[in-house]
Amino acid sequence: MSTGGLALLLGSQPNTFDGLQEIGLAVYAFNLLLFAVVSSLMATRFLMHGGLVDSLRHEREGLFFPTFWLTIATIITGLHKYFGSNPTESYPLALEVLFWLYCACTLVVAVAQYSFVFTSVSYRLQTMMPSWILPAFPIMLSGTIASVIAADQPPRAAIPIITAGVTFQGLGFSISCMMYAHYIGRLMESGLPDREHRPGMFICVGPPSFTALALVGMAQGLPATSNGGLDAQDRRVLELLAIAAAAFLWALSLWFFCIAAVAVLREPPTAFHLSWWAMVFPNTGFTMATIALSTALDSAGIKGVGSAMSVCIVCMWGFVFVYHARAVWRQEIMFPGKDEDAH
Image 1 (cartoon, rainbow, N blue to C red):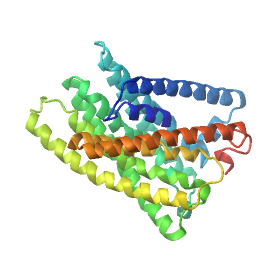
Image 2: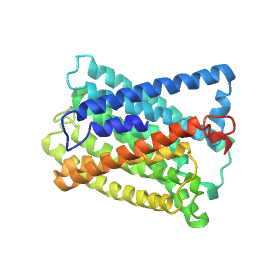
Image 3: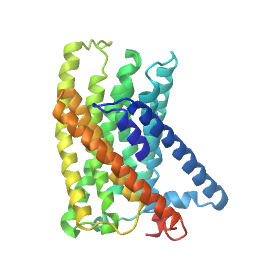
Image 4: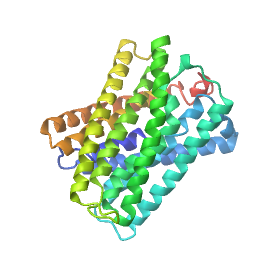
């Protein structure tokens, strides 16, 4: 999902250069390759050794299942970013179908996984981590997908897509806000998490960031006319409201980012964990929200900040990718007794 997010980020740059689009396309293709390889290996593991249900029901490992759907979200949005410039007649319809299938599947995930957690797993608030938000994350990205694809949909499809995007974005963000209350209470009562799990604190940056990005994108993607009589002035009012709300949410993302960054810098982790990728994907959303605001406000200064943040994201992706590969090579993860289910 982080690689797919990076591809989207490269395709959204306000300041470009020759070859950037090709680099983004290469990253998108690499994301597809990683997704295919990892999914195949996981399927092989469960077919040969079983344990799929136990993995999904594990109190820690199971929370990472929604990241599969986050990757699907980046694939759908990347499909439009890199292959939507000269679409065929059936292309918008294909994206529309993918969007509705994604909404249906991720809604089931959000309901089913939280229902299981509420009835079969007992968590203590003193050990609350932002990973509790993950089951709500995929349904929230429905709004992000809608913000990307709606502008090129016919009005017949654009209005329902944007309506669903706002609805499900609101659902995911509302669940996240409820989890934030537990998270802040845990920090106030028990202090920061163990140093090994502090990179996961960056997960909290994601919900307000992607919500800000989605609101601006969906407002800009509204068709000029619809059956409801939406005209250009109505669109402009909604766009201004979306920009104001996005700026509000962007500041919340900034606060969560600073809290997580200070915590990690004070006591950096000593061993690689999958939660390190939280330093990439949520911050990619933060950067894309910054770029969306810079474009909406037509601010050269904010565009420069967005470009600088993008460079940092690329560097962080490379850093985490190298350490991930190093951990696999050293059998520190993906080895009996070494994965997330062993902690």
